[in-house]
Length: 108
Image 1 (spheres, rainbow, N blue to C red):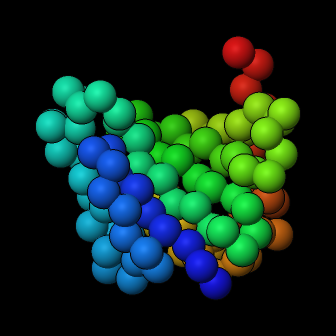
Image 2: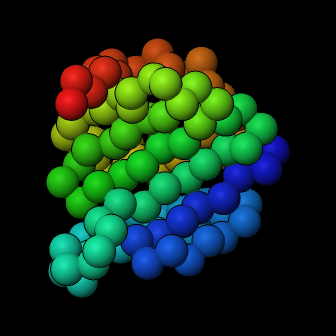
């Protein structure tokens, strides 16, 4: 699997480890992220084409980068542990588990 993370300042890690993913997700709780130009962190799996963005507010956004005409789907109230589980599933290509969640299509 080829995947990478991108943090809120644009730093990319190729195939981040579980501990690196946890550390990145932990940064969502740092006050500095609220004054950043970008407030989300992203994990992208190049093999399956999906990405999950995480926001400090507990929103997760799911996008298929190969389907540019489709709007992202979101889930609210995502805990940091749930966020890690989603990212881990994406990193190993477990798209069925990810897609089985209660995603809502964005309408704006």
